[in-house]
Amino acid sequence: MTSIFDQGLAPVDANYAVQSPIDFIERTASVYPDYPSIIHGAVRYNWAQTYERSRRLGSALKGRGIVKGDTVAAMLPNIPAMVECHFGVPMAGAVLNALNIRLDAETITYMLEHGEAKAVIVDREFGEVMRDAISRLENKPLIIDVDDPEYGEGVQASDLDYEAFLTEGDPQFPWQFPDNEWDAISLNYTSGTTGNPKGVVYHHRGAYLNALGNQTVWSMGMHPVYLWTLPMFHCNGWCFPWTIAAVAGTHVCLRRVDPVKILQLIKEHRVSHMCGAPIVLNALLNVPPEHKAGIDHEVRAMTAGAAPPAQVIGAIEEMGIKVTHVYGLTEVYGPVTVCAWKAEWDELPLHDRAKIKARQGVRYHTLAGTMVGDIETMEAVPKDGKTIGEIFLRGNTVMKGYLKNPKATEEAFRGGWFHTGDLAVWHEDGYLEIKDRLKDIIISGGENISTIEVEDALYRHPSVMEAAVVARPDEKWGETPCAFVTLKPEAGDVSEADIIDFCREHLARFKVPKTVVFSELPKTSTGKIQKFVLRDQAKDLE
Image 1 (cartoon, helix red, strand yellow):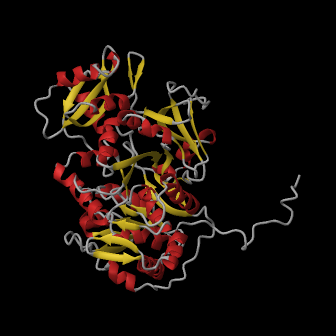
Image 2 (tube, helix red, strand yellow):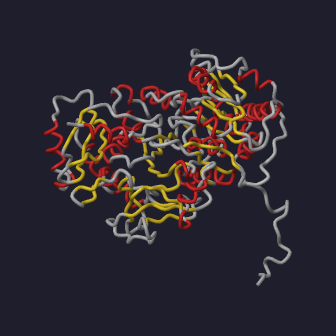
Image 3 (cartoon, helix red, strand yellow):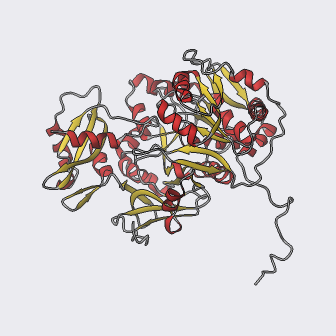
């Protein structure tokens, strides 16, 4: 039966428009043209200039034969060109594939071939590996070379210079919205540990919504000063290139994570917001005291990944940096849940507040639903803070799917939910708390051991700077916890027995690590600890 409200009330040009985050830059450039958009060393742009440069990029790509649906890859650090790519590439109707800057040539070749890249924009720091990767391709893409004045080294990947390329474009380029907000805007590859990485496809609507979701859950307000400690190639910088444009903020660029440089930029430019993995926060804690002094304004840090140990959250807040904890994956545009803060928690002791902040929380306004459910039946688990289930997500900020991989897409969306592979409990107040990755949980003598819980205990040790726990095969118990620990530089003599004895004071006996290895921890370019490497090392221990 047709409702009276449907009769003759259809969407038309006057009441419906496609949602796309590239619209944000047009609005901001028209309302705040003279406001600062980008700071990068001595380089300064305002929003009128960034909009013009983005339009030139889109126009120049189109002039070189890039058409709707083509892939344009970018292998760039956090520099102005990367911000411009997030607008200029989709302005040409193309799809941005931001490549991980730490990848080897063989993996890059796979991604360029799988994504059918028609053009590649590459910084000279990665010119050599890109030339190697492209030499393996049968169909060679257009290569655009970026010579960043803040770097001044590297290998030229092409005779076509980025700045010269922009002069080919029209500063008044009449870019168009996508025909459909479901059209692809970007392609991001997962950092898979086995087999080829999967290509995750984002659409304009999802990017638009998650960009606004970031602003809402963080209460960013207008004109934030945002420091790029998070790589823009990672989930399109959690959609923050578009968020900062929406709120007419300032991008403070940073080529590589350097904790001393981060603190310097915070003070110099009065940075208000920054994002990154817990490892970035931990790095700030371990710089010499003289570099920490002088922050006299509020700084907000959004962190994700594995739950930051309560010890890290507590210590970073004592520095004057307020932490917001979020959770997400490549497949959901970055963060989609947040530990939404409540005023009554302000009165709790610091350690208790930090423990609450370590939760992954509740859904963004822009996500339709979350559930912690039984892995097989997908029935919701009790909200008792004890029963472990898998995190399921659904809504407009879930990917279109995996590129050229219908089987993996179907498996990921089984039962009408996206299967995250993360294990969590659901608290009575509806806040979820991750206990482990499905592949990381340790089963010892039939008991489930959360590696995150063990790591949290390890971080309480005054000499521990970093810690990661994995399963080590054991003839009697099946598996036992194996801890890999990096000590603080000022730590004295700390033995395996010292660490184990400390853990016995904070954990049930069966959860205490049976083995402790002192070493540097292998990490991805986004600061995530590579547990698959540690698992292999644990298997080989005598």
